[in-house]
Image (tube, rainbow, N blue to C red; front, side, top):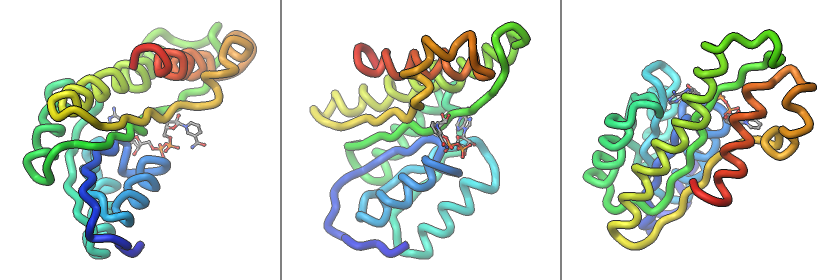
Length: 178
Ligand SMILES: NC(=O)c1ccc[n+]([C@@H]2O[C@H](COP(=O)([O-])OP(=O)(O)OC[C@H]3O[C@@H](n4cnc5c(N)ncnc54)[C@H](O)[C@@H]3O)[C@@H](O)[C@H]2O)c1
């Protein structure tokens, strides 16, 4: 990765930045010169991404936190603004997948997926939006899935009952509330 601009004033938070879509988004933002706070569960992934971006000259910080921990996410926003300035962009890509048909899905697994994929998006959006509202602007992108659009068909038929349902809430809720 090469940082292509040092003129960018944007400040971003990316959840799920230790892997997959979140990592790719964080890398693209960092390359554009955006200062990026990388949020993910504690582990090697987060440090590896941060190390790689810093070596390339990007402005990044890391927050090892779960998105269901509202205090930790609020602290992450505060720390990001203290380090880089007003938050202008947030990409909520933290999420888990769990494939199981409804009839054999234990409540614990259903609840866990909801905690991360729905409650985690709400907790993140609320903390990010409060900061953006304080200074009058900002954009939030929530990463969901095509499964949220086809969920009414797939819910009982597919092998991903909890995933389809949670994603549907983020997709539909994203238009109206989140
Ligand atoms: N990869 C795909 O093809 C695809 C397609 C559609 C939707 N999605 C959705 O996009 C999101 C990201 O997918 P991905 O492929 O990048 O997955 P991934 O597993 O590669 O990355 C998800 C990241 O979220 C982090 N994470 C998980 N639980 C967390 C928590 N409680 N708090 C903070 N971070 C947490 C993980 O540590 C991981 O780094 C998921 O919700 C996934 O369902 C993925």
